[in-house]
Image (cartoon, rainbow, N blue to C red; front, top):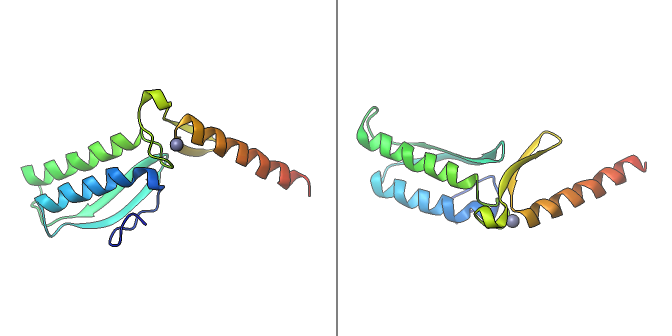
Length: 123
Ligand SMILES: [Zn+2]
């Protein structure tokens, strides 16, 4: 849950990106609606419908805003929102699971996965 009227199936770390994207799209087209917001392959996916004509400059601007949001998610920790090179935020893969976490969240995530696996093999 991102806000009262926005649901997204991704971590809260991307909340600011989603909210500002929503605000910009709403400004351009008050009739625009969110279809789905989710994480896929470690990146944000933001799907929407609009009454803006296709093709049109307005439609392209809206697409560009979404592409920028999706790009920003590639260097913003999905869990805590830390962003940038200094926080070592990057998209990684572990056991075919893609995720974009900062170094700290990634270390936590991986050690929890190890505990989980150890539990499995002790049966
Ligand atoms: Zn983090």
